[in-house]
Image: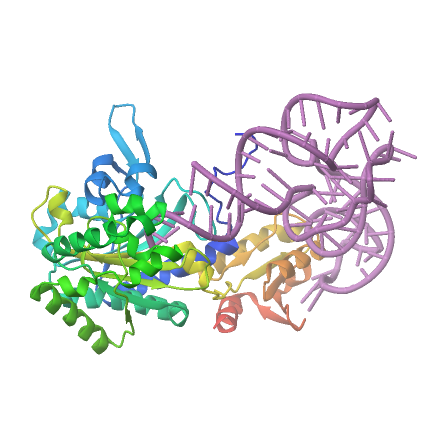
Length: 415
RNA sequence: GCGGGGGUAGCUCAGUUGGUUAGAGCACCAGAUUGUGGCUCUGGGGGUCGCGGGUUCAAGUCCCGUUCCUCGCCCCA
């Protein structure tokens, strides 16, 4: 701790930014609710196994990006790097099998030990939508529709494109994987160093390599489409048809793959070109084998996560500032009366700014800086007449208002 | 983990071939204005020049290390 700074890759969210942050969460929660999703939360820490078993031991996230530690009781714990595994664990822990399809919305901080970059922090935040216990392509369509609706409401849907692909069922994938390994192995000498490593670990990943040499090879690589079983093909077609009916535009990206092991069938990403290297805004897919891998009964699932910081970077809404009233006492004898007025207004849902000290000039200056739109002035003269002076801070116009009519008057102004 | 660019006041930045006490604008505080804000004027508080070491009579300035930020690779939301 050289200086009193936040830990690398973390940052403080100050009120102005937090307003935008919360706008994203509120918008997402509301849209999800419209589709019947209910908000829930899972712990930020889980047993390390929850992530290791679900995401795959060899994935980059598990192998080198997790904040893992042994607690004082000797348990191996991890700060969650993503949301899906925790929700699936909760589904098993709480015996939610009886409630399928279980539709959940959640949000919160995630942690990954990565090199910080624009749109990439070590503590970052995601909104998350999951449907557990639905094997039907209709669920895929719905989950993607929720995402599109959120982006539309945030005003950023037209800054994104929805890329869609299928990874097939396990059977399709085995055949495809073998074909890819065969193809790239025949051209190892032309592969980039990174991709040679991927050839062992995760050959599908070569498909979205950014290396120019790799791209040429990828252009002629076999496509998943040729290896889809009839079941997988029907499923993908149903998803595409459904999205068409739901009015969600997409493009099929045959080379879109997923980094985590648990995905099957549908994979999708809303991407943008406006965030530099971190172009993925919201992404997800189907994970039919995940619950079983975690030790639960075979249960299909599908969901996505969206990076809140990235959504904030893309959206530029101006959340309406609260319409605050300043109460300004004049003279020491009015202080107590001002507090009474402020209390009454607040009980009537009128936000009030009451300064702790200062003469009238100071208090008006402060009211102006805070963006108050009106001031209630109370002094000896007003107290004698049982009125207050209501000053419109934009025009400077003042009127006397009887004390007992103040709330009603302000309510009208607020509306 | 790898590579590029940066770090001077709360913010945005100046700072000459190394040379007295490191500056500006904005912001902040106070006064002009102890019953009335925005404009104006006057004054004021604020800096271990990211940190550590080295060269030098002398370092914000040159050298080395380190840390943090930032952009890209990687990975991913």
